[in-house]
Length: 278
Image (tube, rainbow, N blue to C red; front, side, top):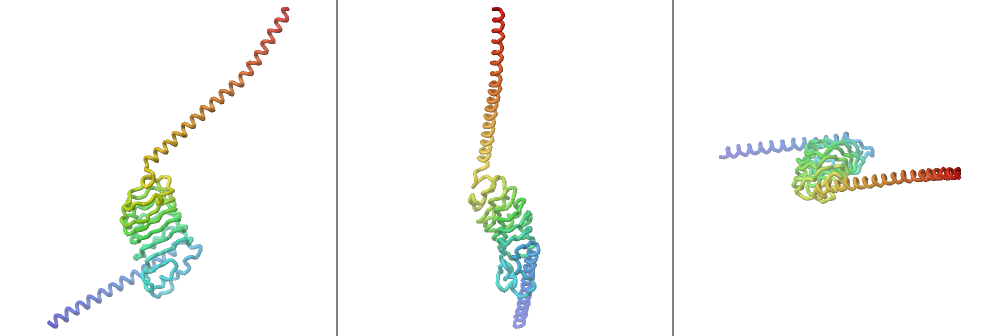
């Protein structure tokens, strides 16, 4: 019995040690991955204002990246990124794909910069676990990726004040956790898809081609457009007829004095004839 208990204890101890080692290896990999994430982000963006000057990677101490501007860590003494907040820093470039290495990141704010170009079609590969994504007030172009529907943890998604075109992917409206959403001030078109959590009209404002609840429905918009075209056609027709009448009157007025002159000449001839006979 004693020998059996000892063997079981030994097995349990060995298993515990293996678990500890695997956990340590995993944590080490994650931490190094997060460091590579920030390095890649810094290298991929132009920083004319030197906003990321504090991002120096020579330090190897635990938690040193937590002192970087715009970086929040899960724990102060652990190089594991929780949030990246780089709003209003004048950053330029495209969406930084190196973010895929920040595997523990839950929040990303790149708003109010000069970022441009299309978003990756597989964007969930880079920000798949974020709960908050703010890319507003940039110059992003192209269509909003349908792949965003795979970012199932999103509570807040802000894409307003960009240059996005096309429609709103229906899958975004089906994100059950999404409470805050905005695509205002873009160049979007088409029908607004239904949202599990309804959004206010302000979320879709300043997109001339968008229609449907909570904005006026598309049929009404079509009727309004038809009414405008009809009114313009009628106005144009009235203007054309009025112009035609004016031209006819002008021609008539010019012709009438000429006829009067001819009559005067005719009377003079008749008087001369009468005088000769007398």
